[in-house]
Amino acid sequence: MGDQKALRQAMVTADVLEQEKTATRLQMETLNIIAGATETTARALAVGVSHVAHKPSLLLQPRDELRTVMPLPDSPASWTQLEQLPYLAGVVNESLRLFFGFINRSARVYRTILWCTKALSSPKAPVFRLLCTPISQSPYFVCMGPSSFPHPEDSNPDRWVQAARDGINLHRYLIVFSKGSWHCLGINFAVAEIYLAIATVARRFNLVSYQMTVEQLQMKRDLGFAAPETGLFTVRAKSEACRCPAIIFSADLPATVVDMPLLCAYVIRQCSDNRSGMAGVHTSSVHSTCQLHPQRDLQEVQRKGPELWLNANNEVEEVAGDRPHVAALQGCG
Image 1 (cartoon, rainbow, N blue to C red):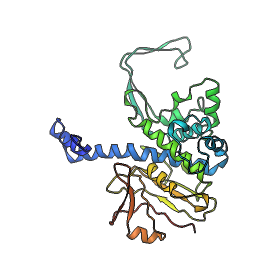
Image 2 (cartoon, one colour):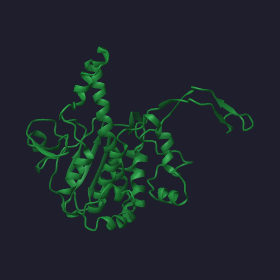
Image 3 (cartoon, rainbow, N blue to C red):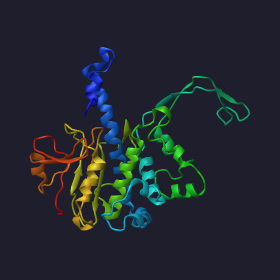
Image 4 (cartoon, one colour):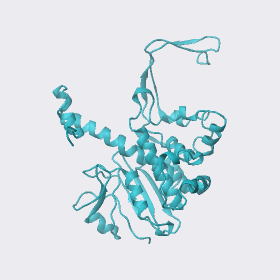
């Protein structure tokens, strides 16, 4: 590793005030990193897969596009190739839009004087916002604005394709990664993960919803992320050939952070085709992650057994121990 340091070591040894190195401060910093690097991408992917499971026709055109770059279900494709496919891009963008991101109001301070003539008070009475005026907005209201996205509660990849044809930049309203100097540092990595995971799922599996409705994806509570009226945000989908879930994603966080979309892609690569009966359940909290267990008996898996997980180098390793088990790979029942 040379002079490189682990994140926690860098925070502890940083040249800052001692009160910035307390256990509480380090815990909060670690939580922010975990939430930003795992829950965000995992939830966007879960929302996208759930919508296409409820409405499989959303994948008809993306699958036609994918066959041009992935002739076989297990053919590799790069992010550069995938992002050139307009309908697949529409599916990804709708997944991000309906995920909403962190829905807390994001505060900003205007550094310039703005002149607004819209009917805030009167069309004939210009409104001036003075220098350094504080404002705030929630990404939820931008992503669900009917003026930008007609019928905003519907997942409609066509809206992005049509907007591109008409020269309309809908991406300006896709603020789930925030904007300006506060935007997400991992935006490119997150988008690449979602493209690769959705493309792999679309090319290999015919998913249908499993014991859930689209209404469960709607925002009823603000818990940092959008949450349903009761319980946790939960997404369930399964293969058409499968009667019960075969892969379960849940909310317990292991000692080592696991990147869910990458591990999901690893699981998918082990399945040759749709007959494998793959299915998934993603129960989400701010600590959401995923692990793979090869045992068939879910109760036995939850009790004990080896784990397969991705280390910091994105290499699959087997680890023995009694950590909280949060996922299982079973045979199709």
